[in-house]
Image (tube, rainbow, N blue to C red):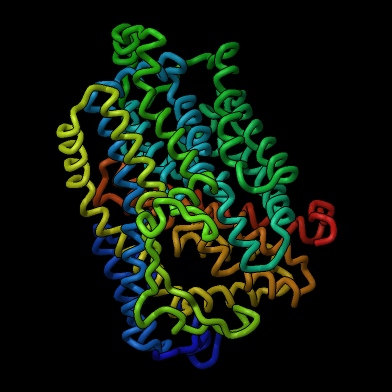
Length: 562
């Protein structure tokens, strides 16, 4: 096996110059999408080619290792990410084909015909619940598809789903990002969970206001401030309490549920003075729609919502550690009948433990594992597919008709699946070559300003990898090491990696592609990126300000003994 040790300053021994070169793949990718309006799959391939060129010719990574890293990323892009996208769109297509999405649309419109309230309910509150249960792009796909069905324009639906899916991302699917962060840093899980909660709770309150401001403007946002405050404050309070008193596991789920219920209760006693609609919706159209909107019985509404209720139940169940362990074949000591059938782990040939991650990114030289996990039964995408299949059968579709619907869904998203695979290939090649670590070291060299830049390092990690979990694995150790060198509490820096990372979620390539697929904007990913880019930057900077103040002013917010 050919081993290769990462080098982080290949350009004249300079971290700064090396970081500029390491950033080229990201610049090419985002430049192609945002400025040259290149279709996403071509932009991803251009970024991948740049990443491989820098890895091989600048960093000296052997061609075989670079190629296998890209293949590993492409496989991960299809499973689990692509499978989640396919499953989410399948559920939506089943609902539409059954004619039930019109009932969903009428029911939500009857609850709140104001587009601002609809955005809060779906993009923020419901999206937070799905993020807490599933993660991996699922809430963006589902929320965007639901908004499209309610009459939102594709760009608005995609952008709002991405902005709304921020506050709960740090805890992801049942606390996975925080659990991974604790594993790579060796810091106490409970303290990390508490610290992230104390950093992000303010943004739980802020994001609903930000969401509606981005959608409708400041004046329109102020008209519905009670709804924004209710949705945000209820989520933030639950997030803070659960993360500090219980742990990271159900933060998003609990916060999302309480936020939805609080908003529904508020709407029984309060409604906006004016009903806000999009510019393309005239008053005559609104009145005609309201007059034509049929009244649905409770049973009819429940039937229409049944696919989404089943989706929530299946996704939540699939996220439980006990269920996941059972579906993966049971514990090693007592395997069940699925053992050896539902879970396959493949060590990537040539690549597995052949790349050595070096100091100062890790305390000592460490071989990087490269294992592809094919968990076809316990994957979140399988829970989505099952919810679509079961819903279809209950709604009267034959198995043959369901197969036709699924085939149609697959054909519709096939190019986007290729795009996702290429995007993840770029991310993995960047990681295994050490380009990400070089950029991280550049951030770490900011000295006394490091607490401000620490969340921006997490933001960069998520923007590159598409995952807060991956960003924590990549940069968590570096954050901890740098903080100790500068005399800053390691728990603060490590937590800020996850807190800052959530703001990078709305611009990572994976999320942009998922949003494009869900809203039928394949080829329009650059437009979506431009819609959310400055929101991502501004919110990440605000996280940096909060962490900086916690480091030097509000030090009492840091958990005792950390």
